[in-house]
Length: 307
Image (cartoon, rainbow, N blue to C red):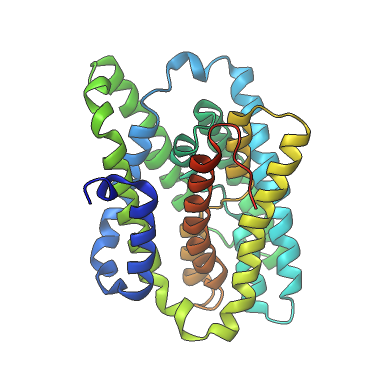
């Protein structure tokens, strides 16, 4: 039992199930999601040294990879999915908002889970967030004809969940406190993700469970943009002999959006139905990470095969 309480896959699975079927307490736990993510980000970047963030050319290259995989590839797929839902404008708008969103901040800690290239994921995610400051308003003007998005939420996320945690991690390293956290870093990270998973899924479970016939097509689309696209990226990466650590990072960048931000924008600017793609995709993101973690255990570093 003790091992289960520190097992990441078990903890995430319990968080997902409780969120879906016993999510009443999520309205209270949601206040803890931002601090929990900040803690996770800090712990996940403890082993990233200043030299990993230099030179500037490395930052630019990683940023371009982040834009390529998260915006050109994943957003392109989400745009095509929005066309499939053209008969239902609310759902089509929901997928377009997902396409406009930056990558999930959780790409960085999930990279650690999968033994990927953490410095690369950090720089690629940061680069994609900076690009989002331009891309999101442009997409809003293109599809809705106005400056629809308030970028203050995006800027807040960038500083609170990327800049400040990286700075805090460097302070902990300089104070030699990072070594004292090594033995408890894993359990703390896992339980912080339990809070995040339970809160996000619990707050939105009613959307998923109320009308399965309306939700089912969205679920299939969410499956395609996570499991399906991840399989394709993994397959092509292996053919091209991409380093397995770098490939793990690229798979995450190419499959995960900031669904929380997208769902919040959809609810604030459109309707509950427009938020459905983000809500359903959040659930699939958690399931996808559990699946990738299991594959990593089954096949070992560099041997995991999706599907």
